[in-house]
Image (cartoon, rainbow, N blue to C red; front, side, top):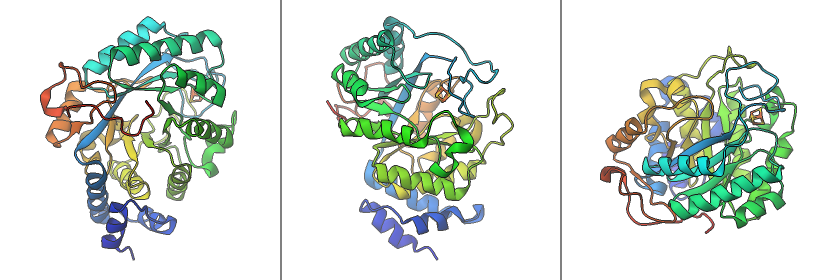
Length: 351
Ligand code: SF4
């Protein structure tokens, strides 16, 4: 029997639920999710107020990846319609970042396909772009470059990179069902390397790949153990040509239940809803905040289109949310006043 008032009181103090409680919640039927959503929403308000983090990405280098992640249309092992191109120029990356900044993005990530970024020319492009994004926008800078060594991350950090994104993708016990070309420990090591440098770590997974509820809890516990700062929650958007192309999308109830569960396991962390939001949640996207999320990805995803930033800003406005102050300079004047929090706020990111 779940003691909701005790769970809520503990989470409001910053103490996450136990694994046993998380598994009990995971077993709740759709008809009994009201108390869960209410508790998770109140914990979000307690720790995050009416602030929301908005992130955006550039698919800086796309396709032709030698790895074989079953969900990913960028793997060279599968025949898909995902775009294939080499690293964009720093000029292009900076221009895209500046456009995102004007549309309300607060954290911006340069994402590249591939097992790892070891090519010096590509790394130099990322460093140049990061420095110029820092110089010309107020956004928190992030990169998602695959399995990265501490040395490479330190170089990027010296260029101004604040945040490292690297998903574990799924639970350790399910990882081998999804990818065999690299190990779970290699994923974990990248996150640990970023943490050892004091960088803000953005690390979550993809849900709806055939994992069990127990495995969703397992991933949440792993992320808590790693003490990551932000947890991106992606819902599988099955891509034609990938091994998971026939996977059934999750129901909106399951998506909201995952968000709420993660809020109660990780009460103080940033819970950001990213890829697959529209496909899996449909008309219920605005409920993610009431169920515990405090962030959302704006604009396009890696290989699929998102809805327009204006519709998402309408959603934030209707929910009474404002975009958290960015770390370097106040929101651009072009951002509508109703969703902007004034000032600057480092939110725990390294300078
Ligand atoms: S998720 Fe990354 S590593 Fe895996 S196939 Fe896609 S681009 Fe390659």
